[in-house]
Image (cartoon, rainbow, N blue to C red; front, side, top):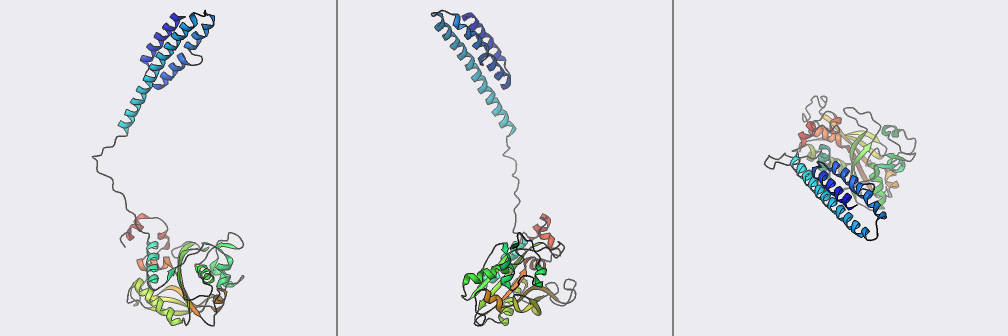
Length: 344
Protein backbone atom coordinates (compact mmCIF):
# COMPACT_ATOMS: atom_id res chain seq x y z
CA UNK A 1 0.00 0.00 0.00
CA UNK A 2 2.92 2.26 0.66
CA UNK A 3 4.08 1.75 -2.92
CA UNK A 4 0.60 2.68 -4.20
CA UNK A 5 0.67 5.88 -2.14
CA UNK A 6 4.08 6.87 -3.42
CA UNK A 7 3.07 6.10 -7.01
CA UNK A 8 -0.09 8.21 -6.53
CA UNK A 9 2.01 11.04 -5.17
CA UNK A 10 4.37 11.00 -8.15
CA UNK A 11 1.47 10.83 -10.61
CA UNK A 12 -0.43 13.69 -8.93
CA UNK A 13 2.59 15.97 -8.64
CA UNK A 14 3.48 15.35 -12.27
CA UNK A 15 0.01 16.27 -13.50
CA UNK A 16 -0.17 19.30 -11.21
CA UNK A 17 3.03 20.70 -12.66
CA UNK A 18 1.45 20.67 -16.12
CA UNK A 19 -1.94 22.17 -15.16
CA UNK A 20 -2.67 25.36 -17.13
CA UNK A 21 -5.84 26.91 -15.67
CA UNK A 22 -7.87 27.08 -12.43
CA UNK A 23 -10.63 24.81 -13.76
CA UNK A 24 -8.16 22.00 -14.55
CA UNK A 25 -6.52 22.48 -11.15
CA UNK A 26 -9.86 22.04 -9.41
CA UNK A 27 -10.52 18.87 -11.43
CA UNK A 28 -7.21 17.40 -10.27
CA UNK A 29 -7.96 18.33 -6.65
CA UNK A 30 -11.23 16.42 -6.83
CA UNK A 31 -9.58 13.51 -8.66
CA UNK A 32 -6.91 12.93 -6.02
CA UNK A 33 -8.23 14.48 -2.77
CA UNK A 34 -11.99 14.40 -3.15
CA UNK A 35 -14.31 12.17 -1.11
CA UNK A 36 -14.26 9.66 -3.95
CA UNK A 37 -10.73 10.52 -5.03
CA UNK A 38 -7.78 8.22 -5.60
CA UNK A 39 -6.15 8.87 -2.21
CA UNK A 40 -9.35 8.11 -0.34
CA UNK A 41 -9.80 4.85 -2.28
CA UNK A 42 -6.31 3.67 -1.30
CA UNK A 43 -6.68 4.62 2.37
CA UNK A 44 -9.94 2.68 2.63
CA UNK A 45 -7.81 -0.45 2.37
CA UNK A 46 -6.16 0.27 5.74
CA UNK A 47 -8.78 -1.89 7.42
CA UNK A 48 -6.96 -4.99 6.18
CA UNK A 49 -3.61 -3.97 7.64
CA UNK A 50 -2.10 -5.16 10.90
CA UNK A 51 -2.07 -2.91 13.95
CA UNK A 52 1.64 -2.24 13.44
CA UNK A 53 1.26 -1.19 9.78
CA UNK A 54 -1.70 1.14 10.15
CA UNK A 55 0.16 4.06 11.82
CA UNK A 56 2.95 3.83 9.28
CA UNK A 57 0.61 3.84 6.31
CA UNK A 58 -1.51 6.57 7.92
CA UNK A 59 1.56 8.78 8.27
CA UNK A 60 2.56 8.13 4.65
CA UNK A 61 -1.01 8.95 3.54
CA UNK A 62 -0.92 12.27 5.43
CA UNK A 63 2.45 13.12 3.87
CA UNK A 64 1.09 12.38 0.39
CA UNK A 65 -2.03 14.48 1.05
CA UNK A 66 0.10 17.34 2.40
CA UNK A 67 2.44 17.31 -0.58
CA UNK A 68 -0.45 17.38 -3.06
CA UNK A 69 -2.28 20.15 -1.15
CA UNK A 70 0.89 22.25 -1.00
CA UNK A 71 1.31 22.13 -4.76
CA UNK A 72 -2.41 22.87 -5.31
CA UNK A 73 -2.23 25.89 -2.98
CA UNK A 74 0.89 27.14 -4.75
CA UNK A 75 -0.79 26.79 -8.13
CA UNK A 76 -3.92 28.60 -6.90
CA UNK A 77 -1.84 31.53 -5.69
CA UNK A 78 0.02 31.59 -9.02
CA UNK A 79 -3.24 31.69 -11.00
CA UNK A 80 -4.66 34.43 -8.76
CA UNK A 81 -1.51 36.50 -9.16
CA UNK A 82 -1.64 36.15 -12.96
CA UNK A 83 -5.34 37.07 -13.00
CA UNK A 84 -4.67 40.17 -10.93
CA UNK A 85 -1.79 41.23 -13.18
CA UNK A 86 -3.91 40.77 -16.31
CA UNK A 87 -6.78 42.76 -14.80
CA UNK A 88 -4.44 45.57 -13.80
CA UNK A 89 -3.00 45.68 -17.33
CA UNK A 90 -6.50 45.75 -18.82
CA UNK A 91 -7.68 48.46 -16.43
CA UNK A 92 -4.57 50.55 -16.68
CA UNK A 93 -5.20 54.29 -16.87
CA UNK A 94 -2.84 56.54 -18.72
CA UNK A 95 -2.50 59.40 -16.24
CA UNK A 96 -0.66 61.48 -18.83
CA UNK A 97 -3.81 61.87 -20.96
CA UNK A 98 -5.63 65.19 -20.61
CA UNK A 99 -8.64 65.08 -18.30
CA UNK A 100 -12.20 65.10 -19.58
CA UNK A 101 -13.94 68.34 -18.60
CA UNK A 102 -17.11 67.99 -16.54
CA UNK A 103 -20.15 69.76 -17.89
CA UNK A 104 -21.29 72.34 -15.38
CA UNK A 105 -25.03 72.64 -14.84
CA UNK A 106 -26.98 75.79 -14.17
CA UNK A 107 -30.13 76.91 -12.41
CA UNK A 108 -33.30 76.16 -14.38
CA UNK A 109 -34.91 79.35 -15.77
CA UNK A 110 -38.12 78.70 -13.80
CA UNK A 111 -36.13 78.26 -10.58
CA UNK A 112 -34.26 81.47 -11.40
CA UNK A 113 -37.52 83.41 -11.86
CA UNK A 114 -38.92 82.00 -8.61
CA UNK A 115 -35.76 83.08 -6.79
CA UNK A 116 -35.95 86.56 -8.34
CA UNK A 117 -39.60 86.98 -7.33
CA UNK A 118 -38.90 85.76 -3.81
CA UNK A 119 -35.97 88.18 -3.49
CA UNK A 120 -38.16 91.09 -4.55
CA UNK A 121 -40.95 90.35 -2.08
CA UNK A 122 -38.62 89.41 0.77
CA UNK A 123 -37.11 92.85 0.22
CA UNK A 124 -40.60 94.27 0.68
CA UNK A 125 -41.00 92.53 4.03
CA UNK A 126 -42.80 89.38 2.93
CA UNK A 127 -41.98 85.85 4.09
CA UNK A 128 -42.22 82.66 2.03
CA UNK A 129 -44.94 80.17 3.04
CA UNK A 130 -45.43 76.68 1.63
CA UNK A 131 -48.12 74.03 1.77
CA UNK A 132 -49.01 70.53 0.49
CA UNK A 133 -49.51 69.82 -3.20
CA UNK A 134 -52.18 67.23 -2.33
CA UNK A 135 -54.90 69.37 -0.83
CA UNK A 136 -58.36 68.94 0.67
CA UNK A 137 -61.44 70.20 -1.13
CA UNK A 138 -62.11 72.54 1.79
CA UNK A 139 -58.83 74.44 1.64
CA UNK A 140 -58.59 74.37 -2.17
CA UNK A 141 -62.13 75.67 -2.72
CA UNK A 142 -64.50 76.19 0.20
CA UNK A 143 -62.17 78.25 2.39
CA UNK A 144 -61.68 80.52 -0.65
CA UNK A 145 -65.41 81.27 -1.08
CA UNK A 146 -65.92 78.51 -3.65
CA UNK A 147 -68.61 76.26 -2.13
CA UNK A 148 -69.54 72.95 -3.71
CA UNK A 149 -71.27 73.25 -7.09
CA UNK A 150 -70.00 76.84 -7.54
CA UNK A 151 -69.68 77.39 -11.32
CA UNK A 152 -66.21 78.96 -10.95
CA UNK A 153 -64.88 75.53 -9.99
CA UNK A 154 -65.23 74.43 -13.61
CA UNK A 155 -62.36 76.75 -14.56
CA UNK A 156 -60.07 74.83 -12.21
CA UNK A 157 -60.91 71.22 -13.06
CA UNK A 158 -58.23 69.19 -11.33
CA UNK A 159 -57.03 65.67 -10.60
CA UNK A 160 -59.05 64.15 -7.75
CA UNK A 161 -57.53 61.37 -5.64
CA UNK A 162 -60.67 60.84 -3.56
CA UNK A 163 -63.94 62.75 -3.19
CA UNK A 164 -62.16 65.09 -0.77
CA UNK A 165 -58.50 65.03 -1.87
CA UNK A 166 -57.13 66.54 -5.04
CA UNK A 167 -53.95 67.94 -6.57
CA UNK A 168 -54.17 71.63 -5.71
CA UNK A 169 -55.24 73.94 -8.52
CA UNK A 170 -53.63 77.04 -7.00
CA UNK A 171 -51.39 78.01 -4.11
CA UNK A 172 -54.25 79.94 -2.47
CA UNK A 173 -54.83 77.11 0.04
CA UNK A 174 -51.53 78.14 1.63
CA UNK A 175 -53.09 81.54 2.30
CA UNK A 176 -56.11 79.92 3.99
CA UNK A 177 -53.88 77.70 6.11
CA UNK A 178 -51.68 80.65 7.07
CA UNK A 179 -54.67 82.73 8.17
CA UNK A 180 -55.91 79.93 10.44
CA UNK A 181 -52.40 79.42 11.85
CA UNK A 182 -52.11 83.14 12.65
CA UNK A 183 -55.35 82.97 14.72
CA UNK A 184 -56.46 86.48 13.81
CA UNK A 185 -53.11 88.16 14.43
CA UNK A 186 -51.83 90.86 12.08
CA UNK A 187 -49.94 91.84 10.04
CA UNK A 188 -49.78 88.99 7.53
CA UNK A 189 -47.38 89.38 4.59
CA UNK A 190 -46.62 86.18 2.71
CA UNK A 191 -45.94 84.84 -0.76
CA UNK A 192 -46.73 81.23 -1.62
CA UNK A 193 -44.67 79.65 -4.43
CA UNK A 194 -45.28 76.12 -5.64
CA UNK A 195 -46.54 73.71 -8.27
CA UNK A 196 -50.23 73.50 -9.14
CA UNK A 197 -52.21 71.12 -11.34
CA UNK A 198 -55.16 71.47 -13.69
CA UNK A 199 -56.68 69.28 -16.37
CA UNK A 200 -55.50 71.43 -19.27
CA UNK A 201 -54.31 70.14 -22.61
CA UNK A 202 -50.64 70.91 -23.18
CA UNK A 203 -50.06 73.56 -25.82
CA UNK A 204 -47.86 76.62 -26.29
CA UNK A 205 -49.45 78.50 -23.36
CA UNK A 206 -51.02 75.79 -21.17
CA UNK A 207 -49.78 72.82 -19.15
CA UNK A 208 -51.40 70.33 -16.80
CA UNK A 209 -48.68 71.27 -14.31
CA UNK A 210 -47.25 74.73 -13.77
CA UNK A 211 -45.94 77.04 -11.05
CA UNK A 212 -47.71 79.83 -9.21
CA UNK A 213 -46.69 82.48 -6.75
CA UNK A 214 -49.48 84.09 -4.76
CA UNK A 215 -49.28 86.85 -2.21
CA UNK A 216 -51.41 87.82 0.77
CA UNK A 217 -51.37 90.91 2.99
CA UNK A 218 -53.74 91.41 5.94
CA UNK A 219 -53.73 94.28 8.38
CA UNK A 220 -55.56 97.40 9.47
CA UNK A 221 -56.39 99.96 6.80
CA UNK A 222 -55.07 97.96 3.83
CA UNK A 223 -56.37 99.60 0.64
CA UNK A 224 -56.47 98.99 -3.10
CA UNK A 225 -53.85 101.68 -3.53
CA UNK A 226 -51.45 99.60 -1.38
CA UNK A 227 -52.00 96.68 -3.73
CA UNK A 228 -51.37 98.79 -6.81
CA UNK A 229 -48.21 100.30 -5.34
CA UNK A 230 -46.88 96.87 -4.40
CA UNK A 231 -47.48 95.44 -7.87
CA UNK A 232 -45.96 98.49 -9.54
CA UNK A 233 -42.82 98.09 -7.45
CA UNK A 234 -42.69 94.39 -8.31
CA UNK A 235 -42.98 94.77 -12.10
CA UNK A 236 -40.40 97.54 -12.18
CA UNK A 237 -37.88 95.40 -10.34
CA UNK A 238 -38.72 92.40 -12.52
CA UNK A 239 -38.98 94.03 -15.98
CA UNK A 240 -37.37 97.44 -15.65
CA UNK A 241 -37.87 100.84 -14.02
CA UNK A 242 -39.96 102.22 -16.88
CA UNK A 243 -42.58 99.44 -16.74
CA UNK A 244 -46.15 100.60 -16.18
CA UNK A 245 -49.24 98.68 -15.03
CA UNK A 246 -52.96 98.99 -15.49
CA UNK A 247 -55.78 97.31 -13.58
CA UNK A 248 -58.90 96.05 -15.36
CA UNK A 249 -62.04 95.04 -13.44
CA UNK A 250 -62.46 91.27 -13.19
CA UNK A 251 -64.01 88.58 -11.00
CA UNK A 252 -62.46 86.11 -8.57
CA UNK A 253 -64.60 84.45 -5.89
CA UNK A 254 -62.00 85.06 -3.17
CA UNK A 255 -61.46 88.81 -3.78
CA UNK A 256 -63.80 91.79 -4.01
CA UNK A 257 -63.16 94.02 -5.87
CA UNK A 258 -60.98 92.03 -8.28
CA UNK A 259 -58.75 93.06 -11.14
CA UNK A 260 -56.58 91.73 -13.94
CA UNK A 261 -53.17 93.38 -14.09
CA UNK A 262 -51.44 94.26 -17.37
CA UNK A 263 -47.88 95.48 -17.81
CA UNK A 264 -46.59 97.68 -20.57
CA UNK A 265 -45.18 95.41 -23.26
CA UNK A 266 -41.67 94.25 -22.38
CA UNK A 267 -40.83 94.11 -26.10
CA UNK A 268 -41.99 97.46 -27.43
CA UNK A 269 -42.40 99.43 -24.19
CA UNK A 270 -46.07 100.07 -24.92
CA UNK A 271 -45.90 101.40 -28.48
CA UNK A 272 -47.46 98.27 -29.99
CA UNK A 273 -45.91 95.20 -31.58
CA UNK A 274 -46.58 91.59 -32.56
CA UNK A 275 -45.97 90.33 -29.01
CA UNK A 276 -48.66 92.55 -27.47
CA UNK A 277 -50.90 92.36 -30.57
CA UNK A 278 -50.45 96.09 -31.11
CA UNK A 279 -52.16 96.93 -27.77
CA UNK A 280 -49.04 97.93 -25.86
CA UNK A 281 -50.12 95.79 -22.88
CA UNK A 282 -49.55 92.21 -21.67
CA UNK A 283 -51.71 90.45 -19.10
CA UNK A 284 -49.57 89.24 -16.21
CA UNK A 285 -51.58 88.40 -13.07
CA UNK A 286 -54.83 88.65 -11.13
CA UNK A 287 -55.44 90.42 -7.84
CA UNK A 288 -57.98 92.05 -5.56
CA UNK A 289 -59.03 92.88 -2.04
CA UNK A 290 -59.58 89.78 0.11
CA UNK A 291 -63.28 88.92 0.20
CA UNK A 292 -64.85 89.47 3.66
CA UNK A 293 -66.09 85.86 3.74
CA UNK A 294 -62.55 84.59 3.14
CA UNK A 295 -61.29 86.78 5.99
CA UNK A 296 -63.99 85.49 8.33
CA UNK A 297 -63.34 81.83 7.44
CA UNK A 298 -59.66 82.51 8.13
CA UNK A 299 -60.45 83.79 11.63
CA UNK A 300 -60.33 87.54 10.98
CA UNK A 301 -62.87 90.28 11.68
CA UNK A 302 -63.69 91.79 8.30
CA UNK A 303 -64.91 94.96 10.04
CA UNK A 304 -61.60 95.77 11.71
CA UNK A 305 -59.05 94.59 9.14
CA UNK A 306 -58.69 94.17 5.42
CA UNK A 307 -56.23 92.71 2.98
CA UNK A 308 -55.22 92.15 -0.60
CA UNK A 309 -54.11 89.12 -2.56
CA UNK A 310 -52.52 88.49 -5.94
CA UNK A 311 -51.44 85.50 -7.97
CA UNK A 312 -49.16 85.01 -10.96
CA UNK A 313 -47.95 82.12 -13.10
CA UNK A 314 -44.19 81.71 -12.95
CA UNK A 315 -44.06 80.35 -16.49
CA UNK A 316 -45.94 83.43 -17.74
CA UNK A 317 -43.40 85.73 -16.05
CA UNK A 318 -40.48 83.70 -17.44
CA UNK A 319 -41.91 83.73 -20.97
CA UNK A 320 -42.26 87.51 -20.87
CA UNK A 321 -38.90 88.11 -19.23
CA UNK A 322 -36.89 85.83 -21.53
CA UNK A 323 -38.95 86.03 -24.73
CA UNK A 324 -39.95 82.35 -24.72
CA UNK A 325 -42.91 81.61 -27.01
CA UNK A 326 -43.81 78.07 -25.89
CA UNK A 327 -44.29 76.94 -22.29
CA UNK A 328 -43.32 73.38 -23.21
CA UNK A 329 -39.69 74.45 -23.69
CA UNK A 330 -39.38 74.66 -19.90
CA UNK A 331 -40.24 70.96 -19.46
CA UNK A 332 -38.67 69.18 -22.45
CA UNK A 333 -35.17 69.00 -20.92
CA UNK A 334 -33.66 70.32 -24.15
CA UNK A 335 -30.09 71.23 -23.22
CA UNK A 336 -29.71 73.53 -26.23
CA UNK A 337 -32.61 75.57 -24.80
CA UNK A 338 -31.54 75.44 -21.15
CA UNK A 339 -27.92 76.37 -21.87
CA UNK A 340 -29.09 79.80 -23.04
CA UNK A 341 -29.89 80.64 -19.41
CA UNK A 342 -26.64 79.37 -17.89
CA UNK A 343 -25.18 82.86 -17.38
CA UNK A 344 -28.35 84.77 -16.55
